[in-house]
Length: 299
Length: 155
Image 1 (cartoon, rainbow over the protein chains, first blue to last red):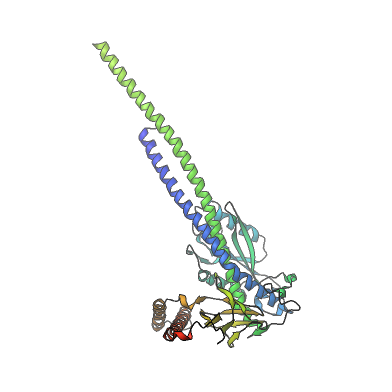
Image 2: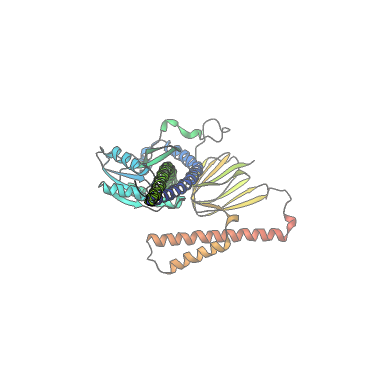
């Protein structure tokens, strides 16, 4: 049996670990909430931008309308934006999203290259020998839209220059505290469910009857030029926030398990420590008793 | 006849309420939007949005974006928008000087850094101008308090 001092040292270190993991758990819990609030904040713009987009795309002859909305006949190069975390200690979060992306694109005919947002994802992709075109790391804990717009610009530029014929976004969707699902979204070319037949444009039920034609200033193309890149960047921003929420939720669960395990272990070790201590006391008593006996006999 | 006005930027709703008039710096010129305007989609350039309601006038700086007008609602999708009252003059002035200084350091034109500095300079100058303009209107109002609070909305 180990000696009491060693056991005591182990108990202390296990308790320290429990303290650290508990702190991480608390930090993550508050970050999940913040990220989800930030996602809510993007909703009005996203909804509105989507309405405007669908509206313009719903106009006749949309395929000749704008290069960002045009399907390419042949897809040779695919670009994937992969959102992961900068840090580990988040359970299976980083590996899950990476594995999901690789499995999905494994059988693609086209060449697949990646833009990695998050250090862990970039590292994992490098290790698997994937082509990583760019990586964005060290996002602030509460990213603002301007932190993400460079990603959007790269993606749109590559698409327009023909370096990529299709652009996908892979991130982790936050369902709830215990469930986060890796998700795939097509960014470019923008796809519409044209069957929706927008022009109803909500908001003003008063204007019934045939919707009046819009005046465009300066023109449809310029408006699309403005809105499509921004909408793309916004989708990436939303994905980043969702992923942040997921990462922190995953980390919270992982850290909760770690804390629980550490507490259990500390309990077991304390039990062992008590046994060892008791054993030592018993042995000492026996020694003393034995010594006394021997003295008494000698006398 | 009022019209609903919503100003949203990518990460938040900046302004939302029924107003009498919205003045927008469109790319093809300034336009004032009143209720029952015909449907319109336009891009916006860097400038100041003015809204007026119940005798109150509010200003917002905008760095660009898009506006959708429908008879009962104006939606402004802003790249970045800010209520002029929230602008901190000294911080804006600092930002302007920083941007001006960076430009003077002679970054080669046509690089991203140069364009960024130039944009920063434009943005901060706009914020300063807007904030000063608002300050002046305020000063005038307090000088002649009689002109204020008559409840008259039409100007």
